[in-house]
Length: 343
Ligand code: ADP
Ligand code: MG
Image (cartoon, rainbow, N blue to C red):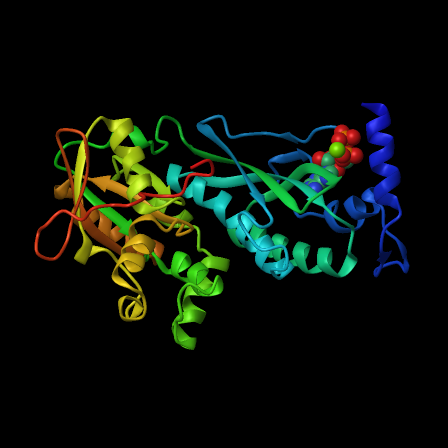
């Protein structure tokens, strides 16, 4: 372990000049220069710089804890702009807090970096801390190692005791709701990969959805007293709705024409690709939730308060499995329902 650590530190200390100081930057320069000054709220008794952080949670709240790993060439492209990478890795973690209805509080950032490139890190950290500020989270620690570009964020949030939104709470008869739009990020990826040719304005919107997902944090919190079950759509709508159905032991029917999709997208993709993007694309980071039909007004008020559009896309039923109906009421066959790293 020690040898390994020594080699690692030796390695990383012979890196790029540090633009802020005009000398090479090592791991500890990086932590001191870029991370140690992280803003933090009063709940953080001890932040970056010790063996562990100390935080003081509010005693009347439950903690929600989640972790997401993002690897270059799997979750983002290694040559993506550093600010886009920073945005995305935080947004996908914030989205998990949104799905629980939690207030995000603290994050830990573990980074494997091929080199300590001051310019890259500067842009990365600026955006990282800007997003932290926007959502009120404090960076309280992490780890830095040399390696292929990869990040892991652990995020901790809190909810009023007993109120966290779960996948298992859906009830037969519930409406199924979805925030924002689905399919744009997947269409953006197909465009970047050369499998689709979108006109410039549409391509920009789709690229924006892929690079800058908006975590629906305020909406999640606003739904705490209204939603029965919730989850964020990260791996494809059909697959992620399947998780709610599995956890709640129920079935569902959704209608293709009710799905919120970027206008114009259907005209520029083949029908199979459009359906695949919308139903199974992934990377949407929208909130999928269920609520009783009597609570439609409350859902709409929560959406208005959060400033996030929501659409009613279907209904939870007794039984098992998901049925997607097309405009004519016929079931749509699903080739793949979502993303699986090992499929
Ligand atoms: P250790 O030897 O215990 O792993 P380190 O020397 O790696 O400690 O880290 C020193 C301090 O810097 C710790 O508080 C750690 O949480 C923090 N830290 C290291 N890397 C990061 C990072 N990428 N993001 C945030 N904090 C970091
Ligand atoms: Mg460490």
